[in-house]
Length: 502
Image 1 (cartoon, rainbow, N blue to C red):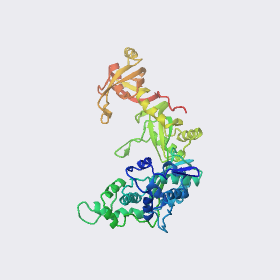
Image 2 (cartoon, one colour):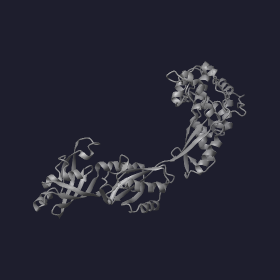
Image 3 (tube, one colour):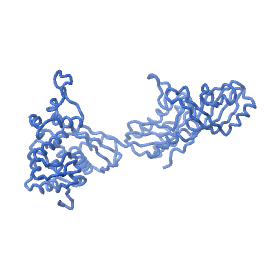
């Protein structure tokens, strides 16, 4: 173990813990100098050589070419970098020599993406051909040095740290694993991708019916590595891959995609039309509503945040022909992959003004909320109360005697509600007791009345009024002793403190 410029190099001694971290066997002894010379012979670059000898772990962020060479020369004083000429490392296919170019490519794309991050986190997808080559090299080293203990290497972690460092050095961005801004880097290398096609036909890549030529194999990492385990060393030698040779072209960036953590906006909405559903409503591809609440509010927020899409989550729902009045129904919207993370009160007020009331829907009290607060919406569905007003037709005139009887239920009653016929196709046919907390009747004309209700969450109000063929007992029709039907229904209040204060 040595220290260089105050930095402890953990790769100088391959202790048991490092071997175990790599998934290796700590039994026996092995000559590190011999393995390093084998890696040099196979034309493996210094960075990969360190990985094949030990995992640098968290200290890799402090490494540069000089410290890597010093570490390797502590095992073999005569060690020099392989003379690759215009070729590239047989293991990483040149990616460790291409870090600055990769970082520059990413930063150029960030500058034109519309995102304005201050921090970032990189995720890396390696070429499958590179992973196969490293697996073959590990097997080859084991053949050459039977006590060689390392069974896996983690090139991805080291590469991610080096790319993070290069991006930070070339910009004012800070690498942070908790960053809301993620860069997904996919590396490609066509030359090494063709390697496993050389031996794949001998392991089952042919037409399964035994006819015709071998088909191009398309499989994931686990499938390919599993098939590789059945290929002999002689077979790999025959196709020139034992050990794999250097490559002529370096690994390159295949794609870079950016994403930003969702933000959440809570609020309440009111709806003053009876032809607007809460969410898109269609049957057989034909829309049955003029538009929907989610289609009015969601796109306005997506536009404001330059986002990809939205998810609309209300606290309960009303039917399309029901108005949502009073202070409105609580809801939140998840704004997915927004390019703008921070919306001020003024920004949100502007969104409310844009929505306005022209389409019969209005958003109120839009507020940025913490993701943890969203659970209150679902909890509210189970425990909140709701207040309604119904326009009801009664078969008989509401006499003073009938109204007197109804006054007995002013403080409420319990209704046994079996699943309504209209939703029986999607709900279990169970009987659920529901509490009516308040029942007040206001006669309008001989056969007409306004019925004011405050109910437990989940109460089917329409079915309580007409009885639903006896499935709601007692119903309002039972209480007045004649048939009754509901003509109009409005929600006046949803009793839930929302949105939460910051």
